[in-house]
Length: 161
Length: 106
Image (tube, rainbow over all chains, first blue to last red; front, side):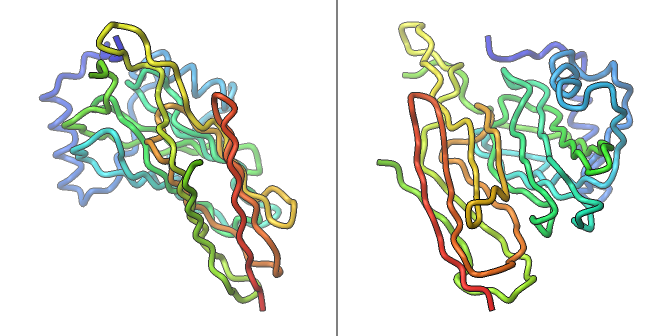
């Protein structure tokens, strides 16, 4: 019930993509896929935050292990390249997922006083999927990073014993 | 009574960027799990975390069921003056926990 596994990406393809990125030095994969490729709920959740503004890839770094053994607790760190001055700073960071029951993971509100635009937490992933981080800058622009994560043991959304 | 762990440097130089780490014990029940009988286990999560310095909000997070149990949050701030950090966690079922930490800025 909890899994919304509706994309056509097969496990084989997925592993292939991730293996490719691992060869490239474990650099987070910045998605260049068209917007249609993302499931509707993820797109809707992102639109809720950014409205009609364009979201460009870049500036944001999403650190998350590409291969996760236990989806119940996955370390995640988002950092944004920003001088964090009064004129040019990150206002908020929003993290989304593709296949959990809910597309939102967390919204983090910061300001020039933060000194460094970086947030770390631990998240749950119910399936191998894409995680997207979007930063809202003080000039109103949005920047994003996308990482594909393979989860071997999914976060427990099954029955409680 | 929930267990809280807050890590703030005791001392810093003015202008230093310091890291603040917080950990709060909480089940973060997603509301998507079921009991053996098939009933949904009601959602019970922390929905909001706020950090204030001398009363001014410096960091806030909205949390969702996709945050792991015992939410850990690490973020940064600039040490401007000596004072007090206040932390607040708000959640379902009337959950409210607070913590505070002092810093000396030279």
